Structures are given as C-alpha cells and as structure tokens.
Length: 130
Image (cartoon, rainbow, N blue to C red; front, side):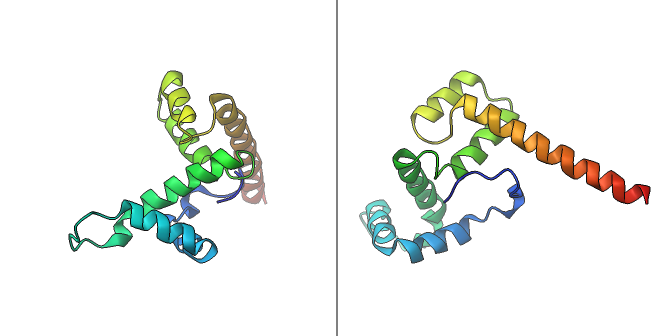
C-alpha cells in the first residue's frame, strides 16, 4: 500500500491491481478477509465484487499499524474529500476511523502537491517558449 508520494499521478490508482498485489503478498490475510465478508448463503454473486472493500479494510489495518509508512490510500481519499469541500469535523471523524489521514497531514500533503504542480507548470511553460 505504501507511503504517500506527491509525484504519483492520482489517475494511476488501480484498485484491481492493488487487490491482485495484496492477494500475492498476503494470500492468507486475503483469504481470511474474503471468507469473513462472504455471505452466509451462497448467493451466486461474484466474490471479486468485494475486492475494493477488502483493499480498503486491509489499508485501514496497515495504516493503523504503521501510519507513516502505509498512508497512500488514506492520503488520497483525505485530499479528495477536503478538495470536495467536506467539513473539518467530518474529516476528523473519518480520521478517527482510520479511513483518511489527519486534517493537518492533508494540509501538508496538499502543499506538496501544489509544489509539484508549480514545478510541472513551470517546465511546461518553458517548453512552449522554445
């Protein structure tokens, strides 16, 4: 799941790929969590439809254990919600649940993203000046 990196484009987040990587890296955990989420009766539903939920549950578990090293999904979700205008109080509640990083962390990461954007903008304008 990894640490937040402001240079990683948001559009490269692929929950299907993350689910596949988690299945390879932690097959026993993935199997346990899949069985816990499975319906009591076999409803004929495709179990892979719960993969994104499993990814988030495992991300919360990893973030709870090592919040500095495993905050990628929580950071992206926090930045997205903050940018969408979600109130600070709601962000604090979600942080308490381990779903997103803290408000202060979101502010720091937004600053880093802004710096990356400024650098990319600067270099893109240099290309057009040639």
